[in-house]
Length: 375
Image 1: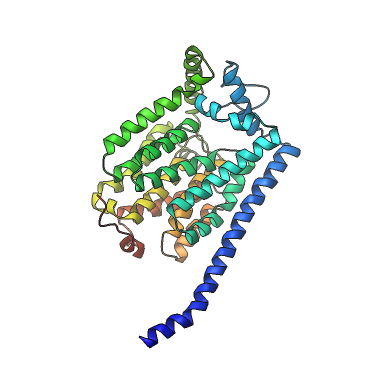
Image 2: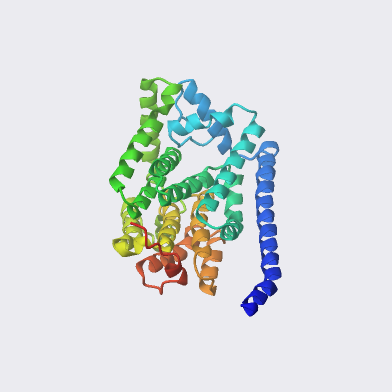
């Protein structure tokens, strides 16, 4: 007993020092992200570039209120490609001045991702994951894009389902779909949990309410027209390949297939590990699937662009901090951050799927994180 007590006393300074180092690193990471938010807001506000994404977001609210076509081209700017509901939600960022609105928008994106990370990881793992995410988060914020927020909503849906909060999960997914359609893939997370039919029903009701919400500021006829115009834009964009696996195949092999066969094949590969229902009880398995899903929705997205990859990087960061530390995993994680886009993320996604399928030896965390009480 004395020996054990003495040993603990000797280790206490080391433990306390490790905790101090952890707090210092966490503070530094948060400070860097805060400086990014402020610095990039200043860059986009006082040193304007031809890239005016946030201008489009702000204008979409006023176009919705004034009954104008959200999806028409205004000036030399790009097209608005989100739902009418998303245009309504840009109201808090449209009312203030440009610089204040952009500061709020960047802060919401960064804060949402930090909060969502903390919902599913412990503090030390969150710090390391955010450290890995900084390069892609920088790109997303510099482009004034919503991708960090979309990643956060998918994480929030996962966390809510883990807590049995189906309404909260459905709201997170529906909000993500209102911004970009592909977060609907997060509905597959409900497969791990009981009362799946109820979860789908709640999502359907929540989605219907959100998609009708613009009626607060517009007429039913105009809202129906807006959804028609949105459909036209999405249909046209379906022919693109973006920075995706489909583009990789085109570049490497000259493949000119439609996107859907490749996307369908990717979806089958993504869902195949779910056939092993006995592994659903393990939290590590569910987190690895979440990570794979986050990578999948980007690399198989025909509209993927550089700012989109903060979503995929979020998946890689979660996978890395939840896995044993070894050289191969570190090399794959770093490869994904080199700016090679889908070329850098496909190898790590393949490894994730191999782990989910049990092709690779299960990690030690697979056993430690199992939840016998899960139904």
